[in-house]
Every structure is written in structure tokens, then in C-alpha cells.
Image (cartoon, rainbow, N blue to C red; front, side, top):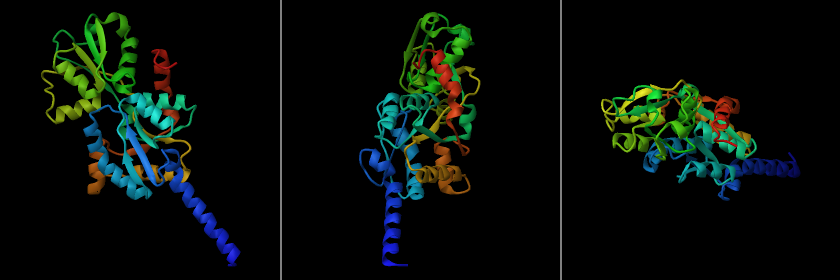
Length: 292
């Protein structure tokens, strides 16, 4: 190979590497070689950090990038962080994905979801013996999670509306706890008559003996719907998107590392997903007046 051909080859390789590894950093606060990750704050920040640590280490090995987890203050901040290119990847609920995709005019790509997210559910809980069905909520107080939560607000509200119950007019009062575990605490502490939350967090709290299901009980479980996913900005290099997606899809419980990550993520496995899966959530949000 001639010196000129060799030089061209080296330059081409350097440019390709720069595009691959600078893709997240160049747009995320100008930090080359770093993948900035966050998640909607549907649980306490310390719990989110604990759940992400092994996954972050795994993704760092798979991508060759330094992976940084950055907590956000609220659901809206996770949307703005990805749309405004301060973050590269975010664990979204179905509704926050829809919000980000609409805000960015279709520039958000959902990569993977847990198999469980194909038919995710919400639960309504109470301590009151007189509440046994959705209709019994009329005239009572109810706590949702965050206003932007799919499983803690949008879908529970949607199913209430489907049952001819308008939370804003038929209930005595509604409130927003900000997170699923906070909703359980509000119900258990008698601050509200009932609450709606993500079934996965409910089951985790019960398994950890952090709530007594004989005192705080589920009285309604919703039908299934698409929910959480890991999303990236669409301007991330296709090569890096593939590395991240393939890393998630390769996770299984046959290795100690895979088993730990899947257990922390409350997943049997990860599967590929696509924007079309969230059309029903977008329609529900528009119907409920939560997405303009």
C-alpha cells in the first residue's frame, strides 16, 4: 500500500472511531467517551442508583465508554435532558417516552424494553374495607404518583375514565405523591383512601416486607399495556445504538452478572421495541387531556 493510501486509511479509521465514540459526548455536555444515562425518578434516588450500578458497569464493558448515571429531579427533567442533548440514554415510562418523542419531533429511539413491559399493569390499593371496586372511589381521596407517570397516573386515570369515573369531579380529592413507593406510604399512613401505582414496585415492596398486604391491599388490577423502555436520541451513531441494544438482548440469568442485573431490573429478559408500541399510550394521553 502506498504512503498516501496508508494515510487515507488511517484518517478514515480515525474519523470512524471519532464518530462512534464522540457521538454521545459531543452532544451530551461535550464530554467525549462518556455515555450519560438517567431514569425517571419513579423510586428513591438511592434505589435507582443501586439498581443501575451493575448495569452501568456491564454497558461500559460492552461499549468501551465511561457510563455515568445522572439522577434527575422529576419526570419532566428526564424528558428535557434527552431532548436537549444533556443525556444520551434514559429509562422512560411509556408516557415519558411519548412526551420526549413529541417534544423532539420524533428524534427519540426506544431501543429495548423488558419482556414484562409488553403487558405491564397498574394496581389500585387501599386500607378501607368499603373500597372494593373502582366505583367505590367516588367521593374518596386518591393519590397518583407523578403527573407524568404512565403506570402511576396516565393509565390508572385512563381506566378510571373508561369506567365512567372522572377523577377530577367524582372523587373528593386527588393528589400526586411523586413516586410509586411514596403512594404506598400515603395510603398506609392514612393520608388518602386509595392509591394507584406500578405493579412491579408494589410486588417488590411486598416481597421486601416493606408493606403488609393484609393491611394495604390491592382491590383492582388494570389490563396490560406497553410501558417502560430504554431510549436514546436518534442522532446517536447506529453502531453505538447496536452495541447498546445487543448488550441488553444478550443478558440472561446463566451468568452471575446477568442474573444480578435482571433481578435488579425486575426483568426475565430484555427484548427489542419500537415507537409504534406506544401509540396506544399516546392516544390515551391525548384522550385524557395530558398531551396537547
